[in-house]
Length: 207
Image (cartoon, rainbow, N blue to C red; front, side, top):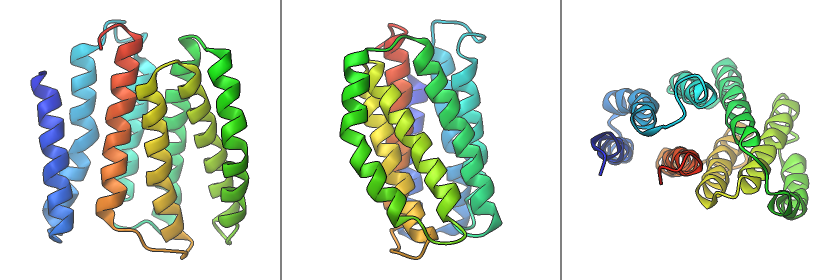
């Protein structure tokens, strides 16, 4: 197994442990290191060259920034900045997947399956001042899931679904509907990122 992948898995485990035990300072450090380590793993395994993989590099870089912005809180101005960073990261992931071919049967099947859940979520998040930005974000995330399904990679598809759960947990906390534990948020988030990267590498013929 690739040593960088092992490092990522160890870092995920340590971060979740730190969060569960309330070790704030160490959990902040581990959170900021997660995506850079995953990026190093991707760079060590990718086969298309840096230019062709630029969108994935940008996605992980933007998500690193989002992690840092949301270290302190999932509310307030930093929440919107962090959401904007992840928004751009999702665009990078989705564009990369779209450029690598689409299985239209899976694509339209995903649209049919996700239309109603998206409608329900758009109704739930209509809480000022979060309603419009969360609605736009949820729509983009749904588009990412659709393109992940269309890519034909189950890893990418499941990764995008896990991302949706993580972001849903954060959104519910932001609008005051329900407080989810940071452990649940980060467990689904780190799994999502790993599955997306494995899926992208599988499209490159690595996995």
